[in-house]
Length: 274
Image 1 (cartoon, rainbow, N blue to C red):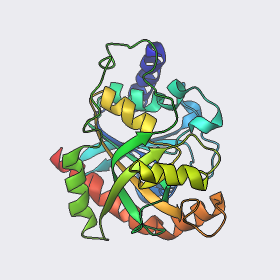
Image 2: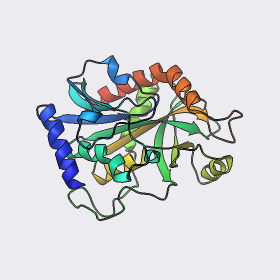
Image 3: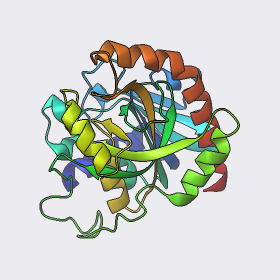
């Protein structure tokens, strides 16, 4: 793993002429095309980057762009591979490991999720304040590499409180701010009504199939994390309609402008203040 991280980091550093990257954002469903709104300093397809996985899911184009926000460079990763695609979890989180090795200070994660909380509606943008890992998996299982982080990292403040405050200030200029707890399921099946009921009973407000492994690895690496879910549907047992990926994409497209406008302003503030 450490060899792959070094190899990929060296490739990207050479590609960007060793310029300093301050922050990064991994775009999930609902953020497709965000990077197309800006003129990148550098842009490269995942297929050309050693050890990166080209996503197979619609809405994840698989492209790394380096874009300036607030006078500092941000790595914009358009799409991610998911655990349910059959990859080892170490491969899923390798881009996050590489970002840490490149010296980023802040990582923003985005995803599409099913809403559980009673006050959530499709199209809502939710700031994740904590997570519940219901998969039985963890990207830190196995021999710890001390150069990457401690054996037993504290996860008390996984989603940085100061960044949550900054997100609230930014959101209040654009839409009603909401936050919540995200529960990670492996997928690719949507959760059953009983699974959703269980998740709600232990404190979850959202259910989804990504984000948590990246958040764990980022905190292990000492990076500040902020994460957002776009509620693209109400979860099973709450929604009266069958769940489908088409619904996810449709709702994401409707809410895209709101989410992308927020994220641009949030990135500018992060790069100016952190």
